[in-house]
Image 1 (cartoon, rainbow, N blue to C red):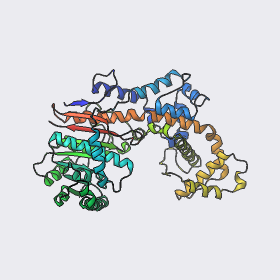
Image 2 (spheres, one colour):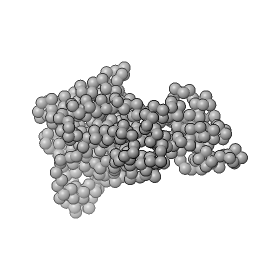
Image 3 (cartoon, rainbow, N blue to C red):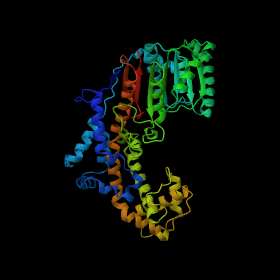
Image 4 (cartoon, one colour):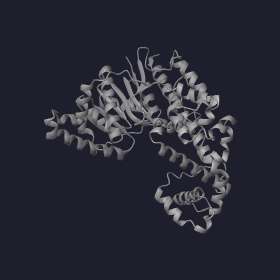
Length: 484
């Protein structure tokens, strides 16, 4: 089994020991991370929390700012119940430290910053940083592993592919995406980039373009499945026969990340460099076919996270205290949506265990239209919050093209039964749920790292570390595996 390099909390002597502990802790608190906010009132989730937690979380000692601080920094009032403080401490303590020990060459950073100007077309600032950092790492791994082909899976518009193929390090790339629309867009951007690189500004800046370089990037449409390693290897060999090759991907979505790792494990690829994303799209056992996205490793065999908990792993609590107004707004939207679901169940529009329609975000303009449509006489004795819920219900059902419309009286009665204290309850429950998100991400990272180690050979090397700023890019962990 290969060496796994992950910065563990101090008391753990091995990744396997750490994996066992985070699995145990997750299973203890699994009911929190698997809470579905939509069913909050229907299922009576609030009553599932310990009584002493409930008492504290709706007290004057725990306002919205306290909840945001709890999720972002782990700070919690000393008057909180010890069992709740222990939960918060545990969720923070067990998080992996993804610090990278990669040295920073500031002169090289400046050179790359100037060079990447030619490749920025279509990228927002966040994507620019991600592509710059990941392309540098891929080039490093390719040089260390003597690879002469990179297979970029889930290449999309080809942002990473173009930098890998056409920057000064110039690594030939096979860019794969399942969408022919994405392929056409990538090829159009490719031609724009080549035009820039042929231009006088590039020449004046010392960039020497050779038209033969255009052939170093090939786009192809291909669906990469969890059991598609053979087809992926075949395509790589057809592109560059006898070449040593690596797999890479930037924010490969859900099962695509697992498919890339399985392709590495089951092929003759020399290395893989992958930044996963969209954990909520990972498949789990039981499933009709044997190939699933989680678990992959022997250490996590039999583990199950659950779809709601996988969504929790996508939470970016590190951003909460940077944008407290947006966080409170998210609490309010969750509250309104849960109230609407409760109302629809109470009025027999949805079965208690039925599938709720996906409303999406109700915009301010949609809310304003609904406010104007509410008869003033029906809401004359309602509070501002009660009227706002009535407007939200109308706007959401209009957005859904739902035939049923509740009366203002029904909306007001629902709010009076569940709404006045419900916002604080929803905010508190969502905070407790979100606190488990990084732990669930750690389970996925460790599972994937151990899986790579199992298939990398005893001389291999596996790493997991933060490549981007977690506030700017919440999905910032990169997995690197190299066979030797």
